[in-house]
Length: 107
Image (cartoon, rainbow, N blue to C red; front, side):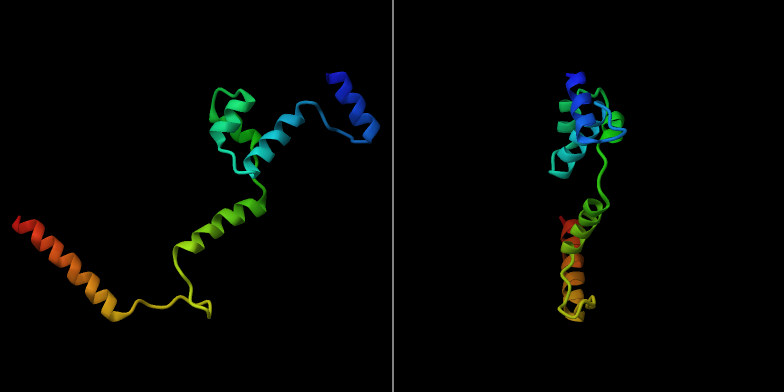
């Protein structure tokens, strides 16, 4: 198998690519397709996550997308600026919290 791979790489004109590099490529693609590190670890036969992390690199675009997911937690107004909470809503939440605490203390 290794000889066939080496012959194919040579015919394709690819330099400095080893058979072992296919494991890194497979891990990278599995992670980029949303597979869990546990799945990658088991497919590659690693005994611990440290080894899997060496193989499973995330692209900068994938990391940026993961961080952007946090933007979905707080809705943004159409003008792109965060809006302060409505004073009435703040007061209502405070009253609800105080009422619950009072009920807990008297129970």
